[in-house]
Image 1 (cartoon, one colour):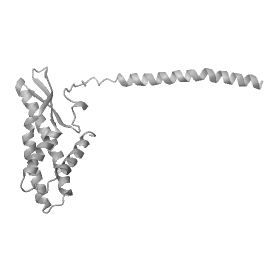
Image 2 (image 1 turned 120 degrees about the horizontal axis):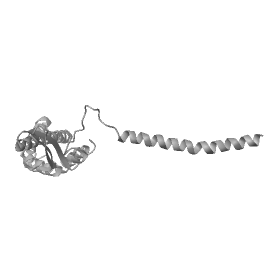
Image 3 (image 1 turned 180 degrees about the horizontal axis):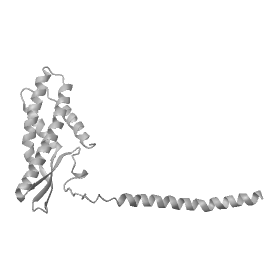
Image 4 (image 1 turned 90 degrees about the vertical axis):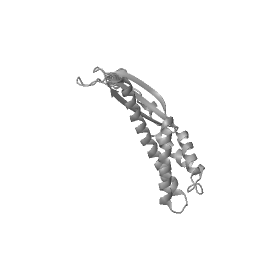
Length: 200
């Protein structure tokens, strides 16, 4: 009798195992399908943003900025987008360069550090303004809205090495700074900040 019960139990377990596996697969599949079939609410519409996304973000080698401009005039929409993109790029570069000059200035052993830091920042701002003219447009898309307006999406970039080279030329030529200026140390500080852009 015990032997028969044991056989029945084994048979039931053998039948239950595939059923459990199938139901597990089914629920997993339905969960995946539910995730991919998510739709916006009836009063919402998905918006396409051209020239945006991970491939247009700044990284350790390039500063990048994306922007959008809209106008009844086609050229004006592009001009608005480019102006906004340049403004964003300038702010981004200035933030990185300020951090670099602060960190570099604090670690250098010179007298009158505050005066030196002010000088570094002043020269760096000049360089950023000059270098913005050398930006490259890596994406430009135009659409026309249902209202008849033109909408321009752009992304521009500037190589980090171009900024570093321009900074080096300006700082090493400055009479006040060149005595204590160390390019290798400055470059190392700059590259450390650029590396952080990859993680943002």
